[in-house]
Picture 1 (cartoon, rainbow over the protein chains, first blue to last red):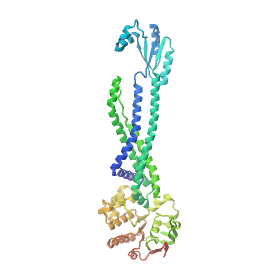
Picture 2 (cartoon, rainbow over the protein chains, first blue to last red; picture 1 turned 45 degrees about the vertical axis):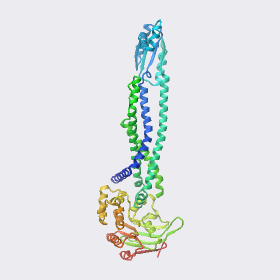
Picture 3 (cartoon, helix red, strand yellow; picture 1 turned 135 degrees about the horizontal axis):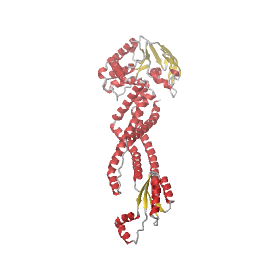
Length: 299
Length: 216
């Protein structure tokens, strides 16, 4: 065990020496890997933020229940009781007079409302369900529509569905993009290691002649590939943070214009660790492929 | 210790470097392999070190038949030999100490022990003061002594040398021969392939003379 650990420590030290022994090459490789990881990582963060927007966007999670214009106070009271008896719903009653007052406050509508002989608006309820999945919202809309004296239940379910479909499409595109850039990362590592094997040819030859096993020769290259990938992950995280920092101001401004208080959220420690681990695994894979092919000529 | 029986090595293309060579080297002996250029000296050394495989015949070292070795076993067999190459094969991107530590790292010795043993080997060949130097900064004789330190650091049972004094001045060559004489005195089996006749006295006439791949 001690011998095994000692060999791994030596391989890691050699990999670090090779990594920092050629700083310019390392920097360029890290930039290439970092950029390759940044695009899918930023896509993931953007989708995550969009999902958050979807969750918090006003109007998406609520239904408007409009009573018949001729519904009596008793009818309205019955509907209110039925709504309050349903679990997982928050209900706000908007009386028709209140609705008219709100309409009158609008500059564009004030004149039109003033010219009306009577209040044409119905009593209404704003219903906010806890389960905001598109299917649950649609089921609730159908149920409420079937109640007596309910004229119309409005749900922007088409918008919700479109948004949901957009997120699914984005996720799929992101996965394809991630696959493409993963192949790019493997290719970058493959080439770096191939060049290293060529540069270390004399060392490999000597090591073989004096009793080095295949594992001993391969190990530093594996460590190099994994380290390079992990460091590429750190570079990618830095680029994602920088992009989010640049976007934070404009997004906040836009959010304020819509009367919301949305802020971009950055990836957490676990997500950064996952990105570095993905980089390390892909780097290790690229190194393994490269070493397997490049070392054949020493057999 | 080393027993060769009808040892033959034929390279792709048909060139026969060794043709049915048989000999026996006992433990602790120092043997000189001589012959003109292309006689098969280097091939014989490489076969003993398992760097190359025989085409036919058998070669038994320490009771192990090298002709029948599995590929995966070869690295472990090579560790029993200390090999000194004609061109030294030093690593010029490492320090002198790191060059000597390489066989110990391959054997998996803990770092501290490896440093200690490598320093002892450098001390033995008179290069401890140059442990941090790059081998390229050493003279030809010093480079050869460094190669010897690397070959003996793992305490091999057999020391194999291919033209260890080629391209060295008289004084450096004498130093190298003295080092070999010291290793011989402590019981290391030594096989030296050379056409330098100065070695004959040191080997007490134990000579394998090759001529066109055959024992003359």
